[in-house]
Image (cartoon, rainbow, N blue to C red; front, side):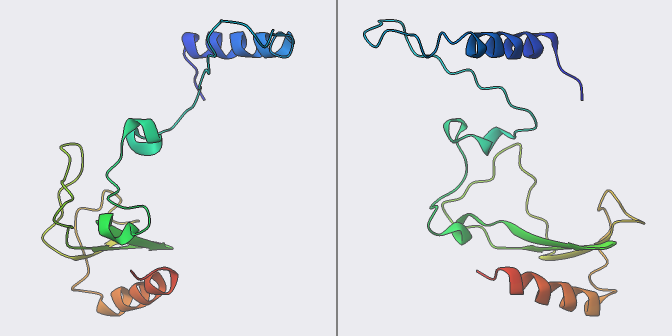
Length: 137
């Protein structure tokens, strides 16, 4: 894992400050602002609430659902869903493909360019059953 110099410096500064005990010894009437330093790795744009997200309703996640996928050994099944009318595709998101069902052999086609759904309907059915047993909106 590679760290940038600034990330390493901020992390060491936070550890030094936390280890000094100054957090516990602060006066309750202090007028200094509270500061939170957040250091994280491998986060997507929408992984933090303050960055925004495309969820229409957290109590109805199926309204924001674009696809569901299941990977089993060498195979990946993706079932695409119709977009909710209030959900817009962002420019950074992949457009919905014409085929609603996609099946890929991840060994022979790791970039997922050639769907084999029409050639392997038994694999599509088996993975669809597995996916629906997990969650079927």
